[in-house]
Image 1 (tube, rainbow, N blue to C red):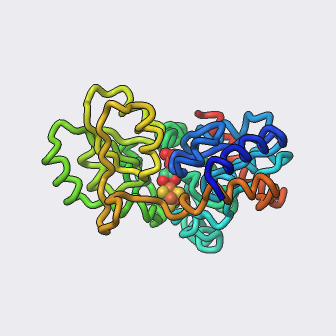
Image 2: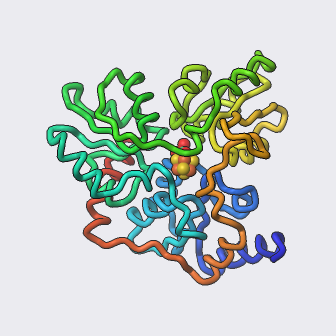
Image 3: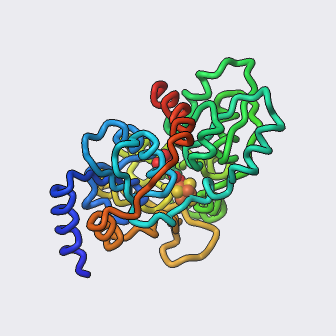
Length: 310
Ligand code: 13P
Ligand code: SF4
């Protein structure tokens, strides 16, 4: 179907049905164009918490839409493709995590929002990359901590907060694929460039970064820093918002180890969502996210604690 027709129909349907479209920065340009709000995980969770719409259409990955449903049990939360997962969430099963947690009974459990409702329900606190330092800072200094499921974010936070964590060994397939050698090659050719990286990246990438932060943090850094050239070490979808915000700046996507046509990293899960799937999901109000009430109330507690701290 024609993209302009789809976009117009989506805009018409969302008015007719009192629906709001929340989209992550990694979504395709066409999806970002029809979205009512684009943000990082924390901003999207806050928007989901405060919306008056009857239907939330979540264009992101499953755990993000699930978080929206946990916060809004009475609203319909629908997704373009519910197979849009996340390597971090998918790599941390409730059975394995339960066994892991049982080995450290005296530890506070902090989980990155990129995990399932079942893992959130086993957590004391949830965090995103935007508020993780503040969340860790809220835990008494003598308290031992389990951090899951992202070991790269966990390693970064240990250094930043000077705390020791027991780490679950998960990682993001996109952010662990950045090549330090290729990054340095680009930097050598652009010595005035600033490197901005997401903390899901491996420590050798973070070591050379001038700025480390969430997707929104990276956008704000690039908007406000006077440099003219930036090397951006996160998923390539972020370039859509950046090229609108700072058209005068040169943005170079950090290269991944694999040779691919765009020489940049794309999240295959995020890219499962298309404008056409978004149209059908809004038209049919399906697939819908449903969560059992006892699981929802358990998963809600650590999310609410996080939102109260943010
Ligand atoms: P942000 O919260 O920074 O948007 O990150 C979400 C994510 O999945 C990064 O890969
Ligand atoms: Fe998950 Fe990585 Fe994709 Fe973010 S970029 S949704 S962490 S797989």
